[in-house]
Image (cartoon, rainbow, N blue to C red; front, side):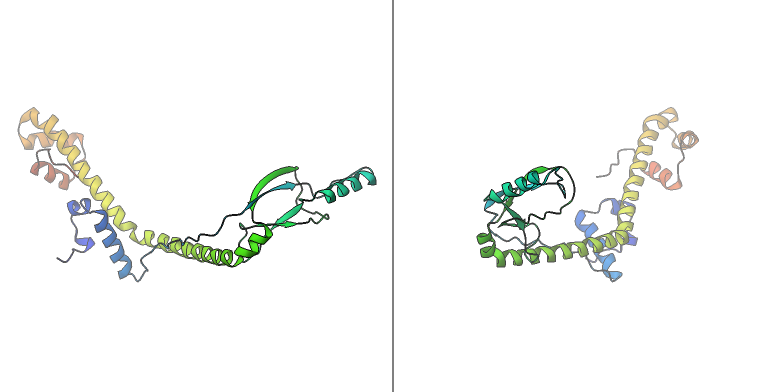
Length: 230
């Protein structure tokens, strides 16, 4: 059976819409306005071996000043004797997060100034990095593609939400209106009608205390206060 137009739905029908119904009317609205229906991209997963070594990075100020040349030479010579020294580097095609350990160190260090600290990180050995390079490049390209698709999806989703907000607002208003009618109806029949047992007189008293619309009054007269909304 052909569905009603959204604008033709009654208050009760709006309040009773299922999640599937709501999605249908939103998609229909987007289609009618020539807006793409958002489809969230699926992130592909690749089983690439994890980094195989643990390294320790030391951050030092840009320059360490000494009062005499001998202390400066002592530091340089000390660093040169450390056989495990090196740096963490990466290939732009493999992505910044996939770093490898490269032996040796540039002693003309010129990093950002700050406190000296040590942090550990997982990294690939140079041999493992070369072995996995092709897979890492493929994984990084797919990640970049996914991030681009996700950004485009979020932009389209924001646009769709703005267009379809009328659906959510109409449904929310319908539910609130029905709940208000039920509340007024319950109050009327539990507190005001028993005072006179005459619906017209009771309604006069009721309307002195409450702002009752014609639609709400009709609902109260037609119901006994037992109507509920699912």
